[in-house]
Image 1 (cartoon, helix red, strand yellow):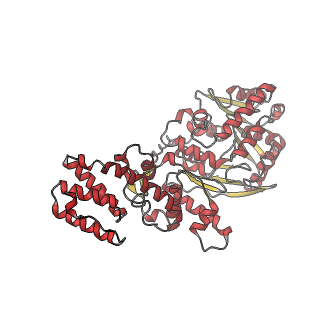
Image 2 (spheres, one colour; image 1 turned 30 degrees about the horizontal axis):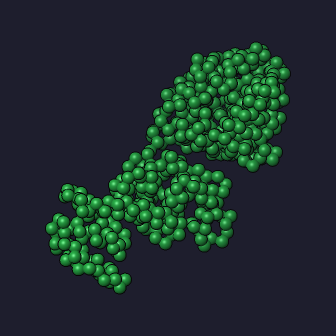
Image 3 (tube, one colour; image 1 turned 90 degrees about the vertical axis):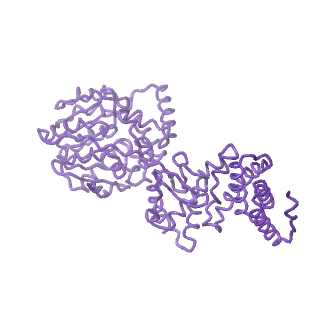
Length: 514
């Protein structure tokens, strides 16, 4: 069964920024205010999130958006304070043609909901406050506590979007071990906010406190909170319940802060909004484990997912394959975008056209490599920690036999003239030949037939790489004579003599090997 398409992104023009928003579903309108950082387009990728959206859309008209400076909204804008966020929410309502709605605020979005409801009460039918409070960070910190908070957010920002990020374990502990979830969420973080904008968002948290206005809320309000929430304590939700006259609260005996980890709360929203529950949340479809991806550049170029080669048609273009090759040979180091422009489109004079073209190639690359690509505005890097690359295994091999076995041929033999391949090609060949020579030095002691056969293969491989390899020719002839394969030895001697004759070098007679 084909999954429904992701709703199109639309844009609301706020003061100084465009805000990306989506809408889906039928029924009473709920407008969701974003938490700290999200990406409404990428969120649909994860099955649990898609299930949550589809469940919500089964009974309501759901509208959500990315705050300025994050997600699919304009990224260059500064991070807004609470007052600007209220006006940004109004801009989304106006763009969507919504006069009145129930507002849903999760986490950091809660104070914006509350402030909007007091500022524009004629546009609010009700509030749903999920895992939030009059503030999400204690505004009454001492100087020492504030210094600790700043140090913590600096560390948090530094590891944002990396394998060290604490988001999954801290915000969704019940699903932290689901296959592929941790890796997906790290990528989601990178696409939700940059580190600079995230730092600014978290710093703004300390100045947000709407405690003084919660008693002015006079619309029906539903408060939802996890009892063991480690991000926003349940006590913050209880402060809302105590201050809002027309409020009810439901507490869940779970530790997750992310709503899609456990969807029981959606029934409570449907009941609050419509008076009954007509639909029940279906258990989310488990996400498939990410494919293991291996890349071969020795002797040929192939990318395999779970052992199955990726067909040429899956790349979309020759440039996408070339991009992959170039990044593999960079060996985990970043490659500048302008260098890639020159390599992939050497005859294109209008550089401004090349950024979008490169983005298309990156989309293909991420799809085929399970997202193991890091890109910023100036460079692109492969995440080798999530890839099995034969070149890396060769260069990291610790014994000669493993090195020789891994060397299936020259690096990218189909791209002999590419200057960016030459250095790595020479490095891999040098590693192989050094190991091969050390093994061939043991020819005289190779008493076992199977060992001699192995050494013969190594000698022939060296000659295939370099037909003038005097050392390999000699070793091959000695091996053949030991095996009493005189005819093969004569042919090997003739091939050696022919090759060296091209260099005006005379070889000794075969009899001298006896």
